[in-house]
Image (tube, rainbow, N blue to C red; front, side, top):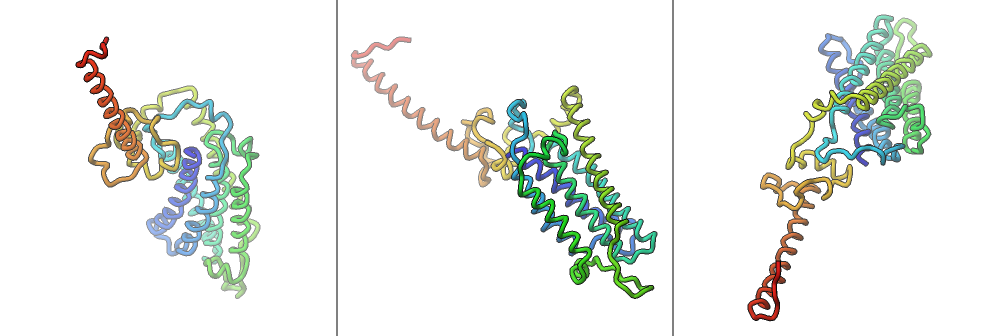
Length: 315
């Protein structure tokens, strides 16, 4: 469950940041038109993130999971790996989307055709990136590809098919601002095979770059520990678990065995917040109090018997 939640973050953060930054940089660079329209951004947020992002929660356990070292109790859900990949995958997607939009404008394509290419590249590259996120360490086209997940494959094929419909079906492409009216000839044109070829090639390039990064980082983490201090920057201190408790409660068995001094009553700063840490601490503190009370009752009976001379106490 912890792995799957991290996979969802690995997928949703780059895809959501990339679409927002594409719009931001288009205005920062002085573009007359934005590569993405509000309805296209809303579509990606509501459809892509929910289908492919949610489908990753249905992934089964990876091979060798029980051979891993136990993770630290204060390991953050969004750690160094997720932040690092979010930064560079977002940068790749933003450069690619703006690049194909500028390329279309340089060829004097209608604005609808340029937007259709940029929008489709965002969607298709996101679907290929979903394959990367199916495993945190394994090669995406290897054993992880054969692991059963009907929800993911249904989402992968469904999103790709719907995108083709959005771009090429009249009426629907107008709703999503993907229509391309050639003013010279007065006819409506759509994306052609050249654009689809470039989109698939760029999406595959991003896919293999991510796979190369997974291999390099996996090798480094297995043979060198010089990156360990960087990971500790994102670890929370004892008593600060409520920061991620709203996610960690669903991510793992975030309970008694993960924390030292779990029998202690939570500090006053945690009052009013719900977390598995505070709940388990309160339950254990009440249980400890009841045990101490029972021990005191037994001890008082023993002391009374000793005073009456009916029992001898020994150390």
